[in-house]
Image 1 (cartoon, helix red, strand yellow):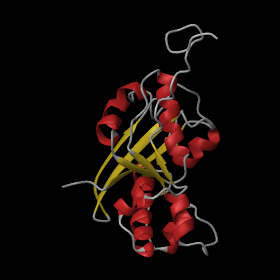
Image 2 (cartoon, one colour):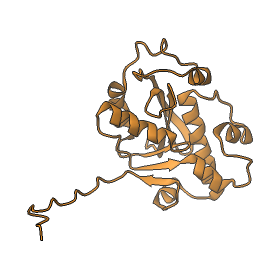
Image 3 (tube, helix red, strand yellow):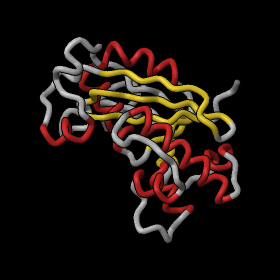
Length: 201
């Protein structure tokens, strides 16, 4: 079965997006979730009481969990070169930050879809476009602030938005709207004065 897109959600130990303590990835095909993967992550960082109260994960929960550099190989195998979505840029920033902190290459997705922006485009008249609000609006039951559950719901919201706008996932990915982000290409290095490519004048 060919997966149309993957949806990622991360939970964090504190206010920094790189402090990932749980990650969930949901695979979607034909508008339905067809597979899911999740893992606890030892962020090697401190936990805020606010975050613990939010998702129920504390330092004792992840004491024996793998660190990000160990988990990232699986994340790469799923998301490398794929269309990926998340609800807001928080999760994309988390993956980038965690990779940078671990000193490993960033997960090289193909394009990233912000399902929050997409939901604003599809349903501009909703009171807000937070994931719990969208879930209530479309009667999607789930347990908030569990990484795989949040990924599943964001994926279902994406499928509903495509149906609402009557477009396919490929048409969406081909568009240049604000909620579609291509994987950044490496910036070209500036020539060094006096070098073969940048001779001093």
